[in-house]
Length: 510
Image (cartoon, rainbow, N blue to C red; front, side):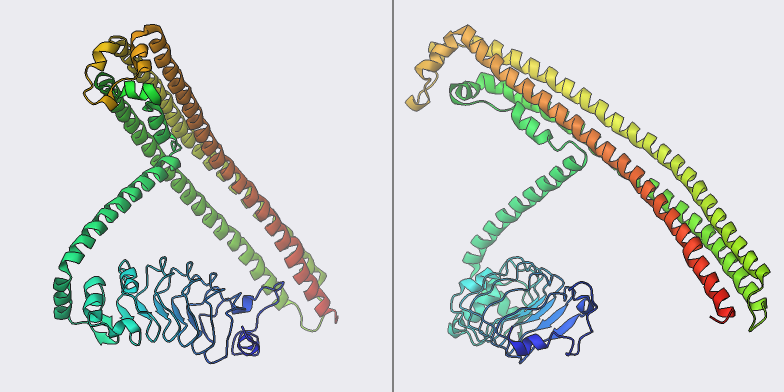
């Protein structure tokens, strides 16, 4: 930023004086709107500390590049009009932007706005945009209601306005003019074939995105429930191998065995997942109830402590007001206040000890309930993995029984297409019962090994989560108690004591 523009950001401008916080410009933290128009700004810079800006005006300068704005994530309104910007960049993190003006720059295309899905108003007039692809780029912006292209070469095209109205679905204003519904219908009729093809593609993309979102949500649920590896287990159990083994597994007879195993495995997995998610929900409820109970106990304790402190302050005020003016405090008053202060310390510490005991009981009850839920999930996990082992064992036995019943020459005659016929090695494998059995058993051993590994992971994940929650509760209570003891000590032995000494000194003429 040139010096004149930079000066606008310094304390001499109409901005709050920054506080001395080790170089951090905290004084700008509450600034919501900042105007830097007509300042000959060449480079966007020196905006550190304005993280809460909502509106920023940098119009009518000589800026050539959009940069150093990434930290202004609360920005909703940005004016970069009347500059020398040739490309849109550096706005990726400004996802709260609703109004963006790049009017009168040197843009040749619209890009770099992919993350700004909340855009409602976009001004791109008086640039060098000539390609309708820039219009199509804006089609995914569902909230875009007003756009301005006036002054761009593409506006000279005969089909400009119908094209924009046909493909930008949600516009209410185009080039400062209210959009006419009849004009929209006419434009869409004009481009109906292209629109229909596009809508089909968009529908497929939307379905794919929805499927991905569902998958991501399920993955998040499974991870939260400490069974995030369950999908990997399924793919490992159904892995068909490579080469001739994969071709053998594709045989209709063996494929039927695989499909049956997949069906039983999926049923077992879904049952286990349902139990895991249910237990996770119960855990969350237990944590919420525990937190609510602690908050209630803290509020009660705080109220009692404040009442005791208020009693001490009232006594201090009364005794000081009763003492003769212009004379040293009577020793009886000083002794009474010291005694009351010592009594306050004892009372507050007794309240804290009572609170510690109450918390300990609550924590113990919470730990018991939470450990019981964790135990329930661990037992369900053991039962699930044992069931999968049984299913896998039965699957292996079926595979071996079917595979060993096949004959290489007979199977060769089933394939009409030469490319699908069995290799010589495959025919030899079918006729070599011992080798075939060893191959299938090796695959079985691999599946069992994977199964054991996933079970260990599930158990470790649940125990880690359990210990993290319980240790966190204990650590939080330890920190709370330590801070409270320090707080009480400072109140009684520092604050109250200093105030009393000041009163004594003041009465003695110091």
